[in-house]
Image 1 (cartoon, helix red, strand yellow):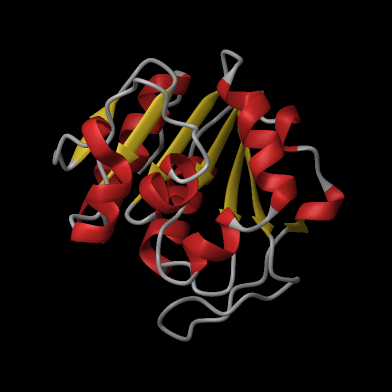
Image 2 (image 1 turned 180 degrees about the vertical axis):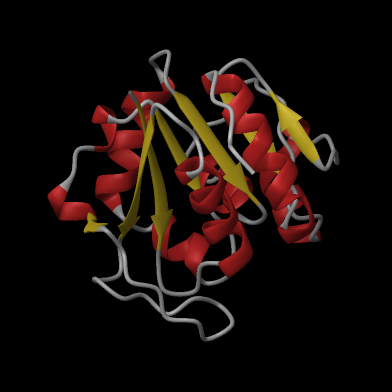
Length: 174
């Protein structure tokens, strides 16, 4: 059984959070938890309240095969500022597990915390995010690396989710 964690925080982008969650839950042999860093019912960037399955204190992110980080502001900042998440992501980045990040999160969560290394990645094309990404930035809609998948924003959420499924050997049923 493949275990996937989708993170959520106050200010996370709804499409980037719920599209992967929905797609993963359509896959056989996969278990996906929506994990909040902002209490049981965070409010997303467009005012939608979402009930998380678990809160960050109830899980060990390293127990998952993949961690998905949505964008949205200030959601990406709220995730980036959570020391528990960053500590886990540093350990995960040194393993054979998958990190997937979309929109603001490749810049605000991964690049800002030194988690990209030399890997190519994409993000939402805002100048401040591109600057944080530096030479890692490709400008692609979705960038697929060996253990890192990134995407540029809401318009790419479905493709992003499908690429994560492919990397994990999962097939969603539509």
